[in-house]
Image (tube, rainbow, N blue to C red):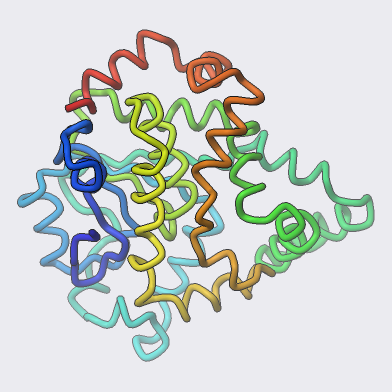
Length: 289
């Protein structure tokens, strides 16, 4: 079940979610949290994150474009901002919470971007470059979305992320095993897919059953419902359809099957991205119950 905040959606303790579902303690509670973007957290939310939950580190998996879009929204007249950012006190706060450590890991990094661009026709490639050079960043992203992302689908893009974002995934997993970073909050924009993928991989290392990992992932469907219409508008702006706001029931199973088939299992995959056996043992030590 998601933990209720004033202005942070889709927030939950991964360990408690998994343990409650299984009826036994397999994952340590109170150390790994996940959520949608916490940018508009109210003063009460910020106090709860820092003082009540004791969170030390926030790992942000978003892209530069997402940060720019969010900054534009915060600068818009109050009547035009999301319902989650209507408080003057909230808007007056800096995005980062003083006293917390921030790690920005753009999980869809350069190699991932190069792969997407390689799927474009020459005409679309030059058109996309032209749009970027003229400052039409959103329109350029929309072109890539319609030409590459829509045909792949949300699950397909998740599998491409597994294959093309190994270095960034390893960096995100390393953030979970540093004692000084815990407790830790991992988020992207929705806290659904990129955040979900990092959590899926960590739980696979811990030996959590597929159905329990799926249960945690699927909680984002209800956790994001209060902002669904606003999210649909964001997706439409970048050329994506309503399906991208949902949680595919088979997402976790497809990721696991892809890793088993292509890499021989989670250990083979993590070896291939440089997340060593010693680091996996450390992850089990830190996050295991």
